Image 1 (tube, rainbow, N blue to C red):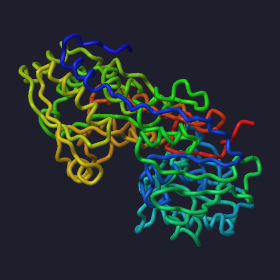
Image 2 (cartoon, rainbow, N blue to C red; image 1 turned 120 degrees about the horizontal axis):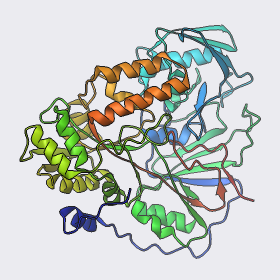
Image 3 (cartoon, rainbow, N blue to C red; image 1 turned 120 degrees about the vertical axis):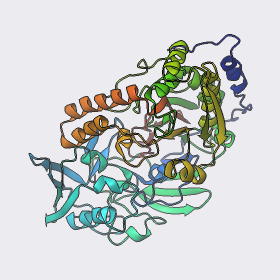
Image 4 (spheres, rainbow, N blue to C red; image 1 turned 135 degrees about the horizontal axis):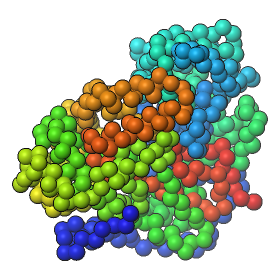
Length: 507
């Protein structure tokens, strides 16, 4: 969809005002050279810890998932579930018993042997009463865990859970050792292809290839990897230009992407992520408790123009809480497409012929205030006044919006893959309740048939696109910049990660 140009409108003027001018970055005098089998990879955010089973921030998994830690299953670069520490599995006809056949000859980096008892201990740690696992709900349907022998793990469920194999591939589900789990936050020890070396807080984490890695089909192309933490986008770009950093798989400044044009030593890639930018509404508060109001606001928004103004035209408009990465995706951007005249008519029908006034609480991440300013101008064109209240993230936003639900509207990028089920959670900050939607979510878990699940995911998307509990805006892209000789990094991001298994330098 081409952006709509608003001649002499406040939106057009706003877009011109939001145009970002990047500081000039001089190219490096010498091209960055491939450093043999070493890699320096840049990240904007430094994780507070390195154990993804005890904290939620995605930066943890971006260092350690699939590099240091592994799970019973894994998720590949196409978003598909694949075997890992479990080489195969059987599912009972009633969907309530999963029998995993485990890999043999696997050891942790400290020498502890992996077997069914270790897998059981790890899962019990994740689902136990004292668990702080960020996705503890993923294990809620596990009733008992049995270990009939060292190579067999049996999960007996209280009810069918069709997403279980997918959930077991998440960073929060990795298998940790019985001896090392308590210290994994600062000294991660897993079964993966890379071993933890050191962490200089505020600067870098270093890993090295695991010479005793159990999967002999994997031929590592790297011996040593350094994760460098650089928050400032200008500094990120300068480090790439100078060759101090070989890759920034998630470059944080779309307005600077053009600065890399003409530099043959670097490759720029625009891929997909799971970062769904949505403007959530408090469905329990007037006037957002009226579906017609929510639908009218959706029709007041030209999504492509929001992408243009908020993220330098880099992003994919969406019509529901789902991304093109995800299985069963349906393009629903036309359900309540941009139509301000219809929006005004629907507002009048709902009892707001002269519009209304409300407040949006925006976290400080760049996409949020930029998107809100474009939306503010669009809402003004249908007679609705939106006041913008900056809200510190995460502490203040979590307190007021996520936990307190004290808000009219907010805007945030939801990062979890396949998290459409959040609209069935009670409580959740949208205050959205729809028994029909909940029933579809239940049906998804009641079957392990991928084709049936995909159909049901399509039904769930359509319900949200029609009900509009949130304004569905766009998926943020994965902006990658790396040395042109570097191969094997994921271009798309079905799960937040920096998987190094296939990364190598071109000879």
